[in-house]
Image 1 (cartoon, helix red, strand yellow):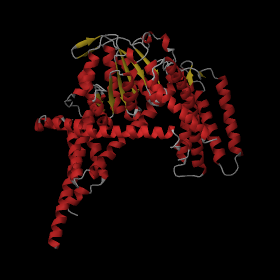
Image 2 (tube, one colour):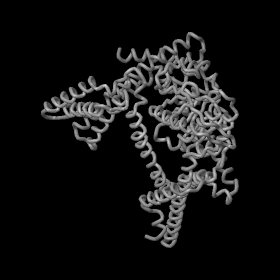
Image 3 (cartoon, one colour):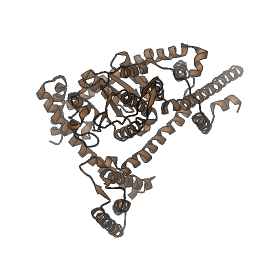
Image 4 (cartoon, chains in turn brown, green):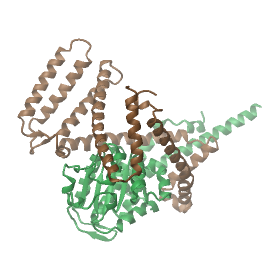
Length: 271
Length: 294
């Protein structure tokens, strides 16, 4: 039964949505709109499951002292911090006790993690978690300088949420992406060797395409460099990409049919 | 170990060091490199430039901070061009960190609009852009393919409220704006595979004019769609942004960063050539030793 009900649901919804795509009738569109709402609801549940899974994985990492376990505290602390920043905003220009509240809330989480990960006595962690929770609740109830907003988008414009995004997340992502340039340079130096005909073709194509943007080479090569580069992009590249796209498309159709017909059951955790 | 062996085995830290030195020099140096305009970028600029006032351009900003260096300049140049020409802009962000990127871009460009500017010989007065009148930012919803399909029926289906929590029906710009049929075009700026969804589920099903701005590494894979006419333009990476800035006469971060990219490419080409010189010399030496050994 555990196997059959999901397979029947996948078959019914899969077949229906295939036909719905080609039927622009009002009633078919109404059902599609209705299913979209389901989709968002399921997505929200998936998010909750994802957060719980992340929490468990990191607590386990701390408990077993796996390599880099210390960073798990930062991951979970940052997760809670962004949740707090995303649900709170200031009422005026004053911060009040907001940062004490935030620190207390983070400490509650860390003490809970400590209690879950500890192998011996957990009493002290539980007492501290309770104490910090009391502090957080008192500040949350009494401080009027800021407030929680669960049903509005107001906190998305709040200072801490924006600053965390603008000055922390953007910097982290940009740094990680910037490092790629160094690895690409090193990899290109090691990999682009004219060992055989195919490797030579790859090397020459890469050099031509990289150089086509170089305005200082234009006086030397005239428009031949740009023309050759455009030809490489528009003929061999286009032909290869088309073949890949069509192959991938057919593969997606085949896989989707296998899922709908119950041949492929990987989504249930079984092959 | 002779010089050719050394050329083949340069420690990667030397590669990194050369790259850093040249990038820093290129960044601090004050010179502009000439930008060659490609037709696939010019077609996007011309399309927007010839739109009448009051048209609506849809810009899905589906990128995260990791690709902002390449994609943010395109957004800045296009949105400012639209607002200066009094073209309205509808925005969504279908990647998880996209709303933050879009929000930041809108704030910056709105500030830039408070200063009078002259682009391509035309003077534009300063003006304040108003949310709901000059632009609407719908925000983020999960599952891009389904959201794209739903917007084909009505933008209100996936987005009854805008990003700021205002009911979409109460925004003046959204009056008479229901689905893709009411747009002049869509320009998807994306650092994810959302572009595939926009081409397959958006343009493929609803047939609206679509152009794309993608990262440099993804550019090649979208050329087939340009050839087939499914998209009318591509901006590829930093260069695409720089070309757009050049066309819009609005130099920004992309034109500046092209200096750095050009020098980085030159370093890479130089190291590839050095590696190959070493490789050929070593192969030749080995062959000669084999002949002599016989």
